[in-house]
Length: 334
Image (cartoon, rainbow, N blue to C red; front, side, top):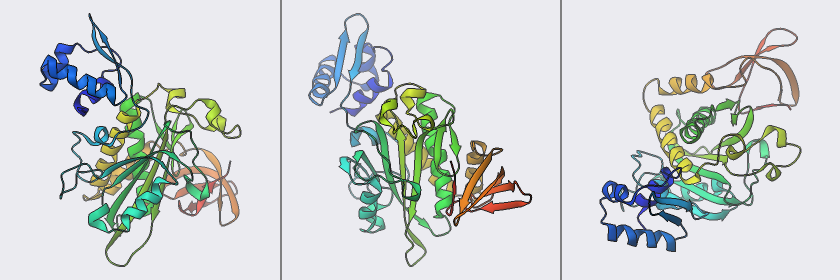
């Protein structure tokens, strides 16, 4: 299957593309284009041919396809082709998994050479998990569920820094595909119009030596309707389709790989982590709000005035004084 053709039709889905234009852009003869269309049709693509207007992608296979996700992306870390094979074996798609983070950790057990930069995506998770033991539940083929293995120096692998870097990358990827204004709700939620559309779960397991694996888990709600969410959380969550428009999950996943690759690259340069912190803070919807948090069983209420360098909340407490609440041991109540 010619993924150049399928991606072009996805990107131009809003209007038909003249066959002559496709042939010129992809260096195909009309006969070869016809064969490639037949091939895509056998793979589950539905392509309409309007004699006066051109070709239009009416429907695509329900599942993400690894070859489409990685094709033509200038990736340096996340999902980059294997040096040994030159193939896209660092992007893997599965129909179902207990958790993409679990699959990523299984790969990380094989060592850095076998797993660094691996991106695993699943259509459905039977045991998807979020922060503080929460579960991520969604019908099949409705989300982008992705976990990435990154082997980083110990100084760069702090879970709090990676959480905000990944939230920033997720926000940028959603903006790439929808144009919507996307914010970050401290510490790990991605929001549109103050409703959660995505979440981040970074897991680090320290090992001896100067570097070790970290798994970055990301979930983005794409096409669900309101009934897909439990009634008790429905006012606070949404899918992109509910708030923006129905996105092409393949194009969104491609943007996510690119943006994650960018932020990991920025973390490796001097002052890069500080720049990421500033960019993420500029999107933080929690700043300036009065909230209640819980730390070690005790609740506190106050106004969020800033984030510290380790991504902790700085609150002006109701009873007076300032206090910092670490990201990894604090959660917002309500």
